[in-house]
Amino acid sequence: MIHRLLLLSTFCLALGLPVAGSDAQETSGLDAAAAVERALVDVIGRAEKSVVAIYRIRKELPEETFGLELRPDPFGRRATAAPAPQLTDPDFVPTEYGTGVVIDPRGLILTAYHVLGEQSEYYVCGHDRKFYRAWIKGADPRSDLAVLAVQAIDLTPIAFGDAAGLKKGQIVIALGNPYAIARDGQVSASWGIVSNLGRKAPSVPSEFDSTGKSTLHHFGTLIQTDAKLNLGTSGGPLLNLRGEMVGLTVALAATAGYESAAGYAIPVDATFRRIITDLKDGREVEYGFLGIQPANLTAEEMAAGRQGVRVDWIVPGTPAEQEGLRPDDIVTAVDDRLIYEADSLVLEVGKLPVESVARLNVIRDGRPRTVQVTLAKYPVRGRKIVTTRPAPWRGMRVDYPTAVVDEEARARGAMAFSDNGVIVIDVEEGTPAWDAGLRPGMRISHVGRTAVRTPGQFRAALAGREGPIQFRLADDETPLRTVGPIP
Image 1 (cartoon, rainbow, N blue to C red):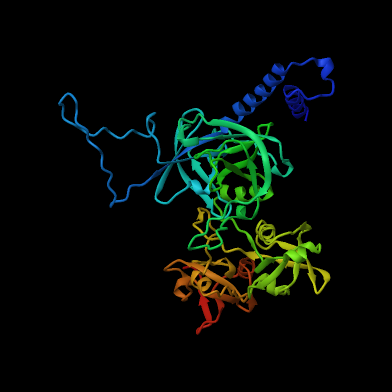
Image 2: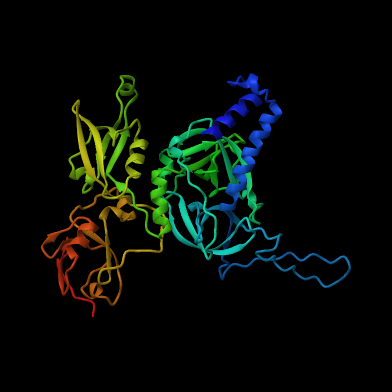
C-alpha cells in the first residue's frame, strides 16, 4: 500500500498536481518521473524471468513442398540453396509465435489456446536463452487457455494477483513476444492503464457456431487496456505495479475503419484459477449448463424500470426443465449477482462448475421466487486436449448427455436431452464392456436397480461391487446388458 501511495504521489508531482505534504518535500517533476521509472524497471525485471517466447512449428505434410529461389551467382560459381536456419540461429523466424507464462517451477507454462494449432511442434525460450521442446499438457477452447509442459525443474513461476479489485485507470504492464522479436527469450514490455472491465471479445461467426460466441470471453469477462499489444503478445502477462499477474493477454479488437485496436486480457479471478488447476493436471475443464435460451427485455420494459432477462424457451431434459423453470420467467439474479442482459446470464451460469447449485432469483406472473438448480455439463465445442482422464470402468467411460455435441441434432433444431441416465462416450475394444455390447452413444439408466442420472451417481452405484453387473439401457431394443469382471 505504501508503494502504491508513493507512485500515486510521484505521478501527481510529475503532472504538477497538488499532493499532501508536497510543499515540505520539494520534490521536482524529474525526481517524480525517475521514481516511476524505477518502479516500472523493478516490476519488469522481476516478472520477465517468468515469461517465455513460444515457437509453433507447423509440421510439413507429405504432399507439401516448398520451393527455394535460386539466384545467379555474380562470380559465376555454382548456385546452391542456402541451408534453412536452425531453431537456435538468430536468423530463425518461426511462422507462428506467441508468449507464455511459467506457472510451476517443474516446467508448466500457461498460454492462450489460440496460440496452438494442428499438426505442430512447440518450443519455448526463456530469459536465460535456454530452449526447450514443449508439449501440450491440457487445452480448453472455452476459456482460451492452455498449459504446455517442458522438461525443467527450476523455472521461476509468475506471482498471481487478483483482478477482482482492478479499477479503470490503474497502471498495468504487458510483457510479450511481439512479431517474434523476443524469440531469444528477452521479452518486450509496454505499459498503459486499465481502460475498462468486463468487456466482450468480438464475435466471429463460423459454420460451426453462427453466434460467433465460442468462449466465455464473448459474454463479457475481459480486461481492456491501452497498453500496446502487438501480434505475438497473446499468452503474456498483464501485471500490476506489485509485479503480480492480473491478466493474460489474448486479443486485439480492431474496428473497421480504425487503425488502433483495443488490447484484451483474461482476468485472473476465481474462475481463471479453477481452470488453471485442471489444466495443470491435464484434466478436462468442465462448465455448468442450465438449459435455457435467454432473451433480453424489450426497450419498453427497460424504460419502465424492469431488470433481468426473459426465459425464451427451455431445452427438454435439462436442469432448467427438471427444476420447473418456465418460458416468460424473468431471471433477475444468479447467486445474488444482478442480471441485466442475456449474455450476463450465460456468463454467470457458465463460470460455475458442473453439479454446483445455482440460486436463481425469478419473477413469475409478477411475483418473486427463488429457484435452486443443480447444473449439468456444458457441451464445449472445439478440440479439447486432455492428458489425464478418469480411469475407465471395465473398459468404458460415461458422461452427462448434455456434454455431447450432436451437430446433426443442432442442425435440425432439436437440442433435446434426456435426463434418464448417463451416456457412454468411450468403450475400449476387447474389454468386458465391449464384449457386453456397450457402445458410444448408448444411455445407461440403471446400474442394477439403482437409477443414475450423473457420472457421480454412476460411480457411486458401482463402488465396491464385484462380479457381473447388469445395466439397463434407455431406448434400446436390448435394454439389459451384463458386464462381467476383468479377467
